[in-house]
Length: 505
Image (cartoon, rainbow, N blue to C red; front, side):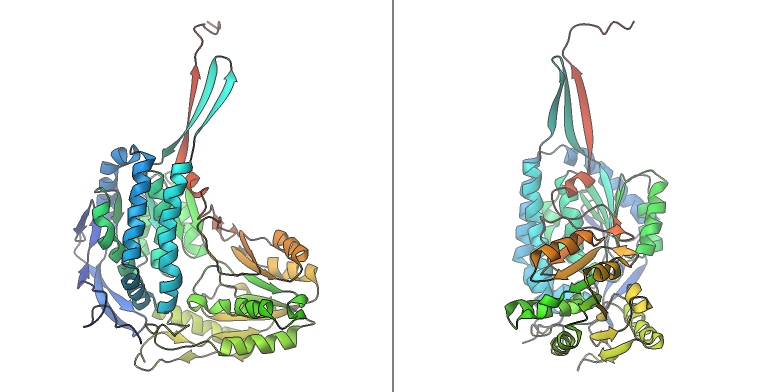
């Protein structure tokens, strides 16, 4: 039984006619009075209007954050930890309705939002609630009379810009460590998917002191750029495409503030010959790993969008793997049985369709898929068939990030060849290695130039495992307790307990 769309009669989730900005603990109309339509990719129609923020709104939000920063930054870690736990509980209590709203706004199947996006977001707040309680400073004894104390202090007010592919989870990835570390936040959601995070704010606003979390909606140039270049923030964190990440770095350089960037990828998924040594549970797991390019409609920075298959098993493996992809259930994203939903926007749909044409023009073979598809009742929605290209690693469909359910497959001859192909990319965010030989898998994993290498699994995102990119895939890390360091600065108190002068003057 499919869920009813948000706002319709009988739906478990309601949405207002208009979402304003959230500034200083209050829903605040945009300074210039402009709004934009939030369009559901499921049916291609608007379902809520959202404030269209500009630099004037960013100024208000940064000012509100500064008004709260000093008090919030001095709260005990116990208080901040407990608040994060209450946020996690509140999200868990409303998990199902948030999952339905995110599906309607983003297009991903509700079974993913129910099983992955929301539970992971909840867990992220709980993880950092624990991490901040366990964090300690240090003391160094320089000599018998001199001691170096090292304290973790919040940066103050930070800016965060989140993408549209995981609206709630990507917000949780950034908000949880920033708040745990004692910072106030000005958050800009992606203009394609603001309602999901605004519903989260609606649910948890009463838990947060006014000004600690502020949300300014709007478009990149109008709201994102003013936030990233604002002199009142001490850091900017961004998740999105690499070209925009370069701009974010430029904006931040004006004020000499740190950045963390989680950017694009073109992740290799390597299948060694021993994968086919037996027809067993491991092979079944590897075939699922091959099909993981379709998770979230391929709109994942770490999408395993390049499969490298050993030449000795290529034909047999690809026959099984193609059948696995062709068995993916498509249909209504609000139906829990659906495994592949809608692309997040019409722009993204058009981009993917253009790459399907590019692949054909380059001479790549379409093994399955390759076209737009329709879903009954949602004929204006943004749907694409899961597609497998076969070709060479030099082709554009192997080198450029498509951000859709499109996989490019090629052969390799030995581990050295696999490593060469895997690293032949501008990116280095994620990779996968599949092998029954753990030593060979270890060596391949260490040799691949990527920040996250999954071995005999893919698309797991536990809060306690560091995530981030090499090369053009970004700077810094998300997840893991090390993330606290990105939202703190170190204060060294160098104290002399000696009563005696040094004797220089």
